Length: 88
Image: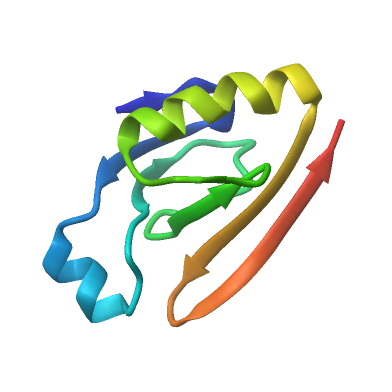
């Protein structure tokens, strides 16, 4: 599913994959377009204080990111949780 506000295409995370990563939920970035703060393979866990539990949650938070003009995300990149922050 395209989340245009974040310049990404995301897909749900299978329960087995979540277990392997040691997380309860999140969505995987299948494609990151130019201008995105994310990379292909990142797992989005939280954006602007909201947990990303589904593809629909990622779509909804895109509206919040645009409205607030603020991105404060927690992602799993490889085996590390990192914070990505941006304001414009």
